[in-house]
Amino acid sequence: MLDEKALRREGFRGGAGVVLADGQEWVIPRPRTLWIADDSEVGARLGYDLGVEYDELARKVEEAVTIGDAAPSVFRAAKHLLRLNYSLDEAAIIEILRADFSPKRGDETDAQRIARQLTEVILGADVSDRPSPDG
Image 1 (cartoon, rainbow, N blue to C red):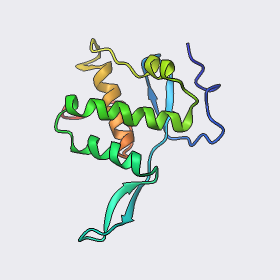
Image 2 (image 1 turned 180 degrees about the vertical axis):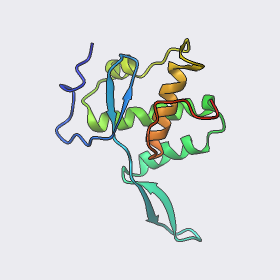
Image 3 (image 1 turned 120 degrees about the vertical axis):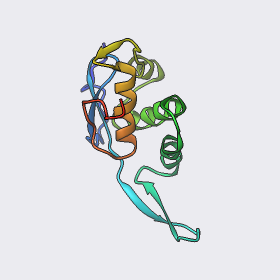
């Protein structure tokens, strides 16, 4: 089992705790939403304090219609965020970013809970431990 605390980077940002596949709570940095000046008609766009690469990842999550559409972008953004706080190689990422589709809590599977909570963090929202009213 990975040692979450030992893998923390020196510049650990804190954030929202999400229980991932290994049963440990991992702290996902919560991005700050910013207005960023650009050359559009509006003169600015919404973005995050984590750079252009992250803005693109978050935009794909925002534009997804279904959780199935969002899942690849959610997991790519989660990898990006986890690596801000932790020294993780690809094998470690695979160990903690996987999800079981067997029901665990009520009607919500671990996969649904993890995807929902990661999406909340990615988009800068508070993380809830309960299923949303939509499921």
